[in-house]
Length: 80
Image (cartoon, rainbow, N blue to C red; front, side, top):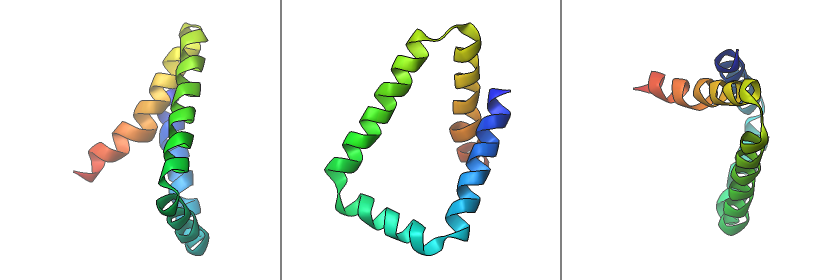
């Protein structure tokens, strides 16, 4: 279930980025111009996800792993 959710979430994100190119460009530009703030936000997001994973039960952990694989690893693997 997690892998499918991850793939669906990735597809939604790509569609949103493609259907709003000006907003996407503004956001990418902002992130590039504010590297420290962007880095801190990414770190905090990762730390929060780690804490959630650490405190979760087995079902929630497996769902999180599936979402990670489906949302990040599978799309990258298909590019090659």
